[in-house]
Image 1 (tube, rainbow, N blue to C red):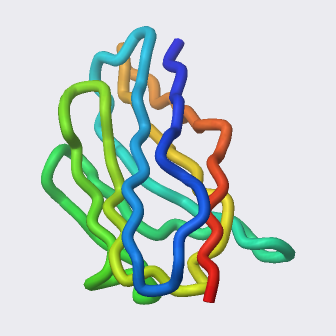
Image 2: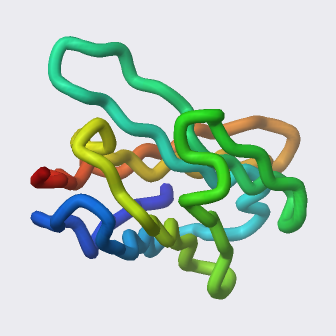
Image 3: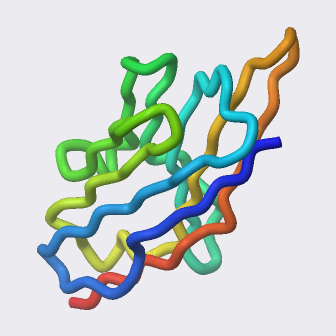
Length: 118
């Protein structure tokens, strides 16, 4: 079983930066999909950044050129958020997909609040 813990959220002013981190513990072998989602109040959860198989990155248009996903080590994935905007206010979730012994497992963090003030 994999457990995910997010950190780095909080309050930031518009135009500022924030770095979210997600650290995995437990059976971390074969973590092939590492992603960040977010969910704003009254909205559906949306995928904003993905890092698949260690090198394939894609971003939602809303965050492209401002956010960067990176894998710091085998256990940790980060999301560097630059030039944040009030519309980036949301709960951010870390997601990890694991392919292990022929089966695919999804793991989610508990979510962390990011609030951007204008």
